[in-house]
Every structure is written in structure tokens, then in C-alpha cells.
Length: 292
Image (cartoon, rainbow, N blue to C red; front, side, top):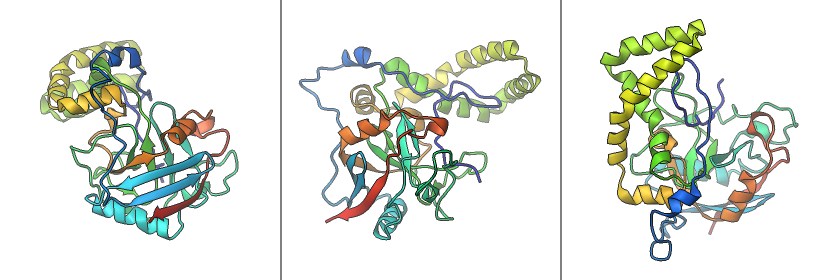
């Protein structure tokens, strides 16, 4: 069973992906607007959204669940009520990207245990919506990769909270490259190029593959510009000043957000990690409960 892992931003991938996280561009992003007059934070939610508290060894995280994401919210609340998450580790932590939990195999797991493929043996149907973004603090469901999960259905229990980074125009466009490449691959006119890239990759001809990738990047520019133009201005500004991981947009189901405990989120994402991005010092959900 493949791990429920998030696919990190990629440049191009004909046979395998190179995982990279977005680079922090705080200084350039700060020049876009006047912080004194605008607030692009995203840490509030309507009162009617149910609240769940994750009491962790690093402190408390309070999540608000979006009731419009009905199946994911109901499933998460069901698991919380059953005390399912008690004892789970944040088994995958990537600075400037996200923190992930929800694998029952992580309970009392030894330091060398391979984690990330556990769950309740069911999936939750995708509820991906184009107007729900992976801003900092977004609560979203992990899932298996497209090659075994083309419907993008979610793990029954594994979730992640976005940490992300600040993105100016250049970095936001770079984050759109993965989406642009998916569109590029689907165009019948580009099939010869895709097949050529796969052949070069299999043959190990990296010099020719790199040259081909550069050509593809140039040809993808109109697609990237179109995708960028379609992003609302407020969303661009929020990514620039609040941050997030836009490479995940339209690929994972967002069903809530962090409304309290951002200092805890920061503490967890800054934990030193070892193999498979697992924190060297266990960060555990002591108890998860619904806030009355």
C-alpha cells in the first residue's frame, strides 16, 4: 500500500519527481502592499464551523472544520469522538510546507518504524474545490498519488496542516508549473514530446533530458501565465503576505483551517527531522476533542 504522502512541488518529471519546497521570499513579498493598512491573515472562521482541539506535546492546535466539506468534516468529527487520534504522532514534518498526522501505526512507534501508510481501511471521496486554497494553516486530507488514485480520494484518517512560505509573483508562478505540466501532458499535440522525455529518462541521457525540459518550460509559459491570471488578486496577496503552499491547490481536499495555535504550528514545523521527514523527537497528539 503506497503511503499517503503529499506530492511536493516539482519542476518537471518524466519518470520521477524531484521534491523541493518553496523558498522563502519574505523580503520581496513585503514590498507588494502596506502591512499597516491591509490584513491578509487567514486564521478566523465562522462561529458555526465545529472546533476540534488537538492537545499535543508541543501545545494546543484548534481547528475549525468547514461544514460545506460535508464528508470530510463528518468523518473527522467521527474519528475525534471515537478518540481515534489520541496517541498519533506528527509522523511527517517538512519545514515551509506542512505537518502531517493521522497514521494509527504511529502510536507507540519505534524510532525506525516506517510510517505513512496506515488508516481505517477506507477512503473519503474527493471534495476538492477551486475556491479553497492551501494558505498557511489550511487543514487538508492526505491521499495516495494519482497513479493509484486518479479520483484524488482522501485517506480515511491522515491529514495535514499547511505551514508553507511567502510567495511573490515569481515564486507563485513557479508553484504553478506542476499544474501547467499536467495540462501540457494532456494535450495530444505534446504526446511526442512526452514520449521522447520518457525514453531519454529510461536511457539515462540526462543531458538531452535537461535540454528537452528547458524547451518544455518555455512552451509551458503561456499555460502558466493563464493559470496565474485566473487567480484572484486577494488570493495572490494572501499567498504573498500570509503564505501557504499553492502547488497543492486543486489536488487535495481542504476542509478546515487552524484558528488558534500558530506558535505551536511553527514549533512543530521547526522540529529537526530524520528519515522520511519524521521528527527526531516525537511530537504526539495527546488528545483530540470537540470544543463545546
